[in-house]
Length: 296
Image (cartoon, rainbow, N blue to C red; front, side):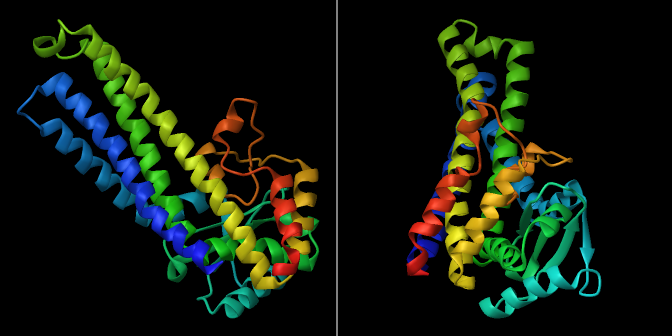
């Protein structure tokens, strides 16, 4: 478990480097198409702009996610059951007590956000509180606390910011290419370069989305294992996953930009969308928990 967490943190650096390379590649293509060689202004501006955006997201994304979800912060007297469950898990893990939120939504779900354990928040929907038993609720919230403990919440925000930045940059460059036809001084006689540039701008967001989905899926497995290790009751988490999947209710306030943050996918994807799904199949998660029950 601890080696997996350490590997998880090392992979974070590699993931961020991959995204920065994609952003740098887009900037380099744009620089060559419009500024030509010897002038690196567009490349430098693209990288600096993307980094500024990610820094802003690093500090603001948590409150944005809670606002998008419609979360309402509670104290112990507002919902003793949920608050004490989170409080006990924080004590068990030796972690700071996160802020606790309730989302008024009949779909059973939960998520964690923040940039580190000292600035973390966890949220649960009213549907989750109504559906699950105490031990199942503890399993789900232990999973979310696992995201906090493993620093997944930080990675999620950084990767999310980079994915959005890549999509934004690609959109701008495509619009510039469409309306200007590329830099006529440098590339009007090189249609192959223009075609390759357009292809790169279209493919880059897709690649970024696939990487984001792959990262999120692996972190869901690790959070399941971390939660089960905390409670020593993997069957409860497996039972919660089964109940939630059987409920089959999508969130009322759906937002694809934060789908990866929820305990269960809040959006019911189509066949193509499953390629970019941020959650592994529920049956796989249940099987892993039950197969490794004796090891927890």
